[in-house]
Length: 133
Length: 111
Image 1: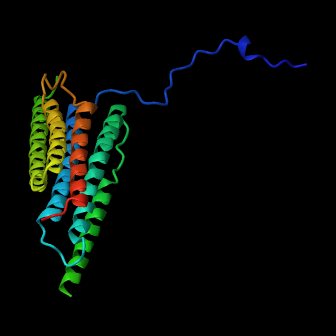
Image 2: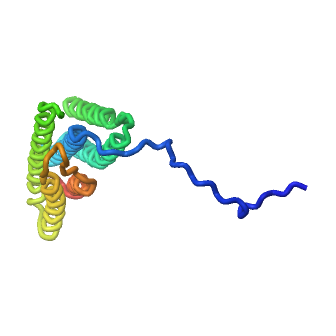
């Protein structure tokens, strides 16, 4: 009769160091600075979007379309908020990847930004067209 | 023996980073000015709440800038790496300003 060895009878083998995870080390300071500058650039973009959105809701004259200024301004402000949130995560992911010597992941933010601005631009065109018709 | 040009590159990179911090501060100042201009015509408690929140957002941002621009040490043998808390302050300040802007856009009518 075969006996199933109980778990307690065996001394657990010493775990070998996990070699699947790359060792971490501080990256070249120039890459750290570059990552930091990228974060700041995204943040400035977010502030520019917020400022433009505020200006659209405040400084534009009343448009022929009801709520037209809000239609233009609020999406810009929201896009700025989204970029402010995602830029921090992007910085952290890049810093982690550089420490581990892994390739940097491509960020979806440029596409999101371009799509957002395109949509607001189309909305502005429609509003202007409706106002002149 | 380290190439002497490498140290220059690091110093110049640090200078560029400090300039980036300055640009970010200017962008924040312009955004705050626009928000204050938007908040000022409000009356009573709305004005003070709006100004308070804008000030809070600006304070978070400025605190992040002050921590972030405190660069010291020899870049070759050790530099002050900007930590997560500093950048988190920057992001949080921007989000607060965005929240104020959304609130004004939704609830406060424009001129």
